[in-house]
Image 1: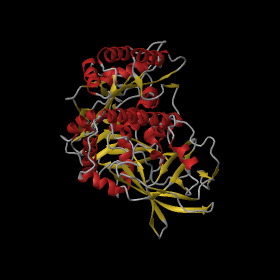
Image 2 (image 1 turned 180 degrees about the vertical axis):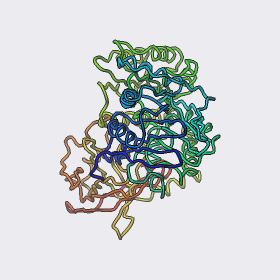
Image 3 (image 1 turned 90 degrees about the vertical axis):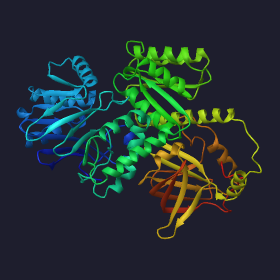
Image 4 (image 1 turned 135 degrees about the horizontal axis):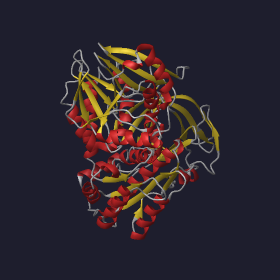
Length: 577
């Protein structure tokens, strides 16, 4: 890791087009898409023809560094436009500082973006009154010297004001939230792009998977432009892997839409905190193999909300509390749900608040009074969520998905298949045995554990193992490249107590190690003292295999703790553990 925490890297990517990459090698903030903890860049762009435009100034974390780097290369008083792919209170801090120094600048944004911006200006009690140019879809902006920008509104539930820009001269698509990744390094472009595969997939899973329908529509619009470079909002700019990454996005979107079950996640967010919670819950649902449709009630037609509730197998509501009440769009959506949905559907409630949380209580009580069953305990978060809360939200989403799957399985008639070829194959597959182990890990305040029997040695040099981890396991998000963990190998005849403990249902965020005799490994992971032996390992690679991830890890240290032989897991069928 670079010892320098933050800087701005300036690079000319084409004639008249410059990127300013505000960088940090540390984790920027507690949002789920930063979970890999590999730093990030906030990419801003300058296009200079006879007029000068700035695209997507960074958030507040980089305001000082960005303005200093910008003024070292460009004259603030000669800036004509600032183009916003999306706007939020965090980005407004930098925008406010920029406008104070360059009041002549015109703001270019989508119609929803203009509404957000005016509201933020009003709430900030700022004296700034910039001229705002509203983009509705067919406008262009001639900056001179051949740079005639085209705009592509690409609204998403999380960012209804989302907008991409395209420069036909350079064939650069300024893609804002699309095609990014949270990783920091010296590379401006994605040479050797395959090394970013995990980062790109993780970014997609966290941000895009729950907005699949809208992302698909956006990609259709983007595909009409002959781009040879994606100038992303975060991470390396995409040039060498552009075709492959575009194909990947379409493949991942199809996989989301092919899921048998769907969850409607309906919310509104006043200051972004409820949206962050929604994103974490959605991640827990989608990684469990169930499609989740995020619906921003403030930007969605009531008829569309009704259709989504009709088609879903379960739904979740999230709301902030404003003046002791829930926002009107959430009230409208609640009325639609109570008046039209099947009472056998599973529900969930979450929300954030500042001084009171009445909206969350109202939602919870309305669903309880109507007789709905809850898929997780109601989540109440005061102010901005931290890392532990987001992990709890992700686990709540996973619990919701598992409850939904269990309910659906119970409804299916069980036919006799004992003599079928499928049953014979399943019985044969079940005869493959594995050692009984418990995988444990800890990252900061976040702890994880799971019972594992699909563990095997994979290599001699270096000594390595593979572990198969179901996508819906809570611990899965703690087992990415570079992460470490401990495999606790259980002893035959001595494992019942540990197995009972770790096989029980834990509430989201609950400490799995209360009452368990543990010590700590060199890297801070729990070691179960009652195990036969342990290995501390580091993840080197991950391969997606159907409903599991296959983790390859090298062993860094280990020790035999007791006498005996390894416990073995015998199964009757290859279709379940």
